[in-house]
Image (cartoon, rainbow, N blue to C red; front, side):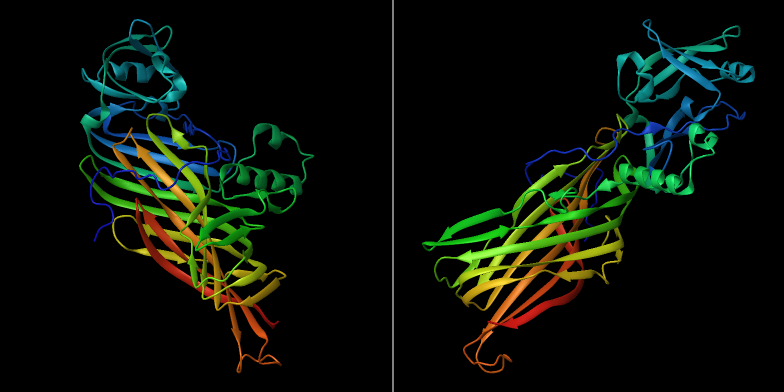
Length: 457
């Protein structure tokens, strides 16, 4: 069954907001052609816009194309457009540095759609605007063309659309850097790395870079059940990493024909837990408990698209049979250069980099009298909430990586311990990767389990 089948999908809030922290760049900037060579300044039925997260280094780049049923144009796509001014009398004036272009404008049809980018603050608006323009006149002395305007609800004039968001790794030294010949190669590489970190999606959750540990240690979940007090303590739980995002969305106002997502990056999950119980119980299982959600600064062009990423962290605990005593143990799992790709229309997915995780076990402290199994899971999510043209296309999607620290305890013959009454303790770390769209979750890949250690008590 298709996961998305209509032009608008209801957005379901997965979790409530607890903390707020901005960790990415804000709005994109218009990509104006660097070489303003002449090409005909003529409206067409293809309305294009190109926008960059960073103009001096690596960053996400967004490109959108709207196929309109009347002629349209984006003046910022032409390097010889020097200025766009929206006047109090309701007119729009273009200043150009090409006389040939001025005379071409006189031959335009009586009604054309203008895309005016948010940087021009047209008529006091800080978002992208669309206008019908006409009645054009030219001022050859000042090299200006003036148009009268009417309001334009662009969604009524779109036949189809394509939206692409990609990561551009290229980097260009700015003029100051290129002129400074004393800058060393190492310093240049450092600048490139810093630019990289500023424009990627930050996946640090509960991580303190000064200490290298959790910024909120000993997060405790306590639930009373059958007069017993059980606790799961995230003594040192955090995630660390960054990612880049790719999206391709296309369709018509009434049908989403193609929607794909890719997320690439690096992720480390650290899970150190402490479990204690004051009395015996037969079985205990907590639901997923949200620890934190961090909405990140949106990647957006106001009025055109808004991608609101967020990182979410949840945890749970399960105990089977009886448990008395305490346990402190943990480990970490790292995924380097992972790539996650999925179609939001069907079930096609592709993942790499999750099949060879790097594991590391941490020292354990265990004082348990009896139990057959204990497990604690940490679940980071990368959630993406996308809206194009103020809701023409709208949905929420993302990936979830679940890491589970499992403890099994056995007693008696066959444990390998010297004495039959000794407890044999074995700890493992495993998990899986999944896709979610709206409220639908789909497991994709289970990464291999690692035995962290085993010993006798």
